[in-house]
Amino acid sequence: MKLPVFTIEGKKGDGKAELRDSIFAIEPNETVVYEDVRRHMANKRQGTASTKERGDVRGGGRKAYRQKGTGQARRGSIRSPLLKGGGTVFGPHPRTYSVRMTKKMRRLARKSALSIKASDEAIILVDDFSFDEPKTSKIVDMLKSLEINNKKVLILTAETDLVVYKSARNIPKVQVMEANKPTTYQILDAEVLLIQQSAVDVLQESIEPTSEEAAA
Image (cartoon, rainbow, N blue to C red; front, side, top):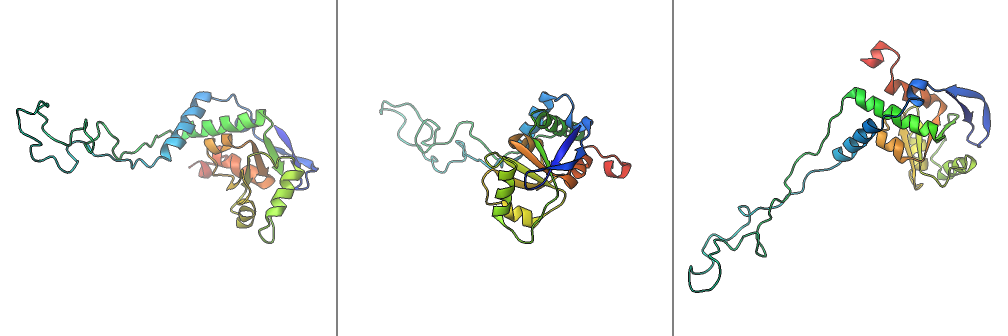
């Protein structure tokens, strides 16, 4: 698969970039995509919710009232879950919600997500760019030139670029990230993937390494 490379002014360049069909043109596996998104969401949960059951609530040690003659049930404790101030029945306790997936499944999920974006024509390649100093207006102008200023955009760079990151961090719905870091959820959550030309190889190598050293 080949895609044209645009300039930051929104014009088509002379060359095209080659994208691997094994990553950007596969039949998406929706089941694996769902499982990876579920894993991502579950792993973000803190799991710190905690409640007190009947035996944990303070008080209720003495007999609340005499056994007979009140017309009430022989209640053993005023900390019963049926009373105000009592314990909670089957309440949550600290636990881990983490879900695990094999590396092979995670790679397939990312390939499927990228293939979905490619089939939806939601991937734009752009020449490498950087600025001398953070300037939000330059990112805004670039997005307007590419006619994606009203969409949720994920910008992928070849390496950490703090100037580009700081330039885009105040723009709603725009996120900057290194090409080897986006998850399946982040790829699908963005309406458009804006990928720097040099970041294409970084993205592909992170998913499908060509060398044995990278695979190890």
